[in-house]
Figure 1 (cartoon, rainbow, N blue to C red):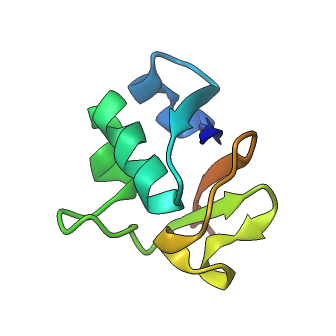
Figure 2: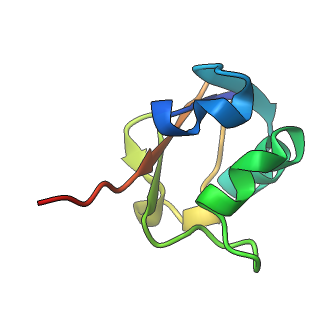
Length: 91
């Protein structure tokens, strides 16, 4: 199942400045594993050493928050768009 990751501006230096990357995977977890394998510089920014999403990173499949759909087990279909949205703090 080929899905497209939408890469936020702050992380594009790790994908050769690409705005999107097409990746295979049946679940968000599988797709993320493929993404960080293809672009290893992304891993420390979105995942912990244990392979879990960092607490400040939100992921959406199309417009659905994966926390409502099974987290990393959330299903991915061909043509889905997966958005990585790092939280931004400021004052």
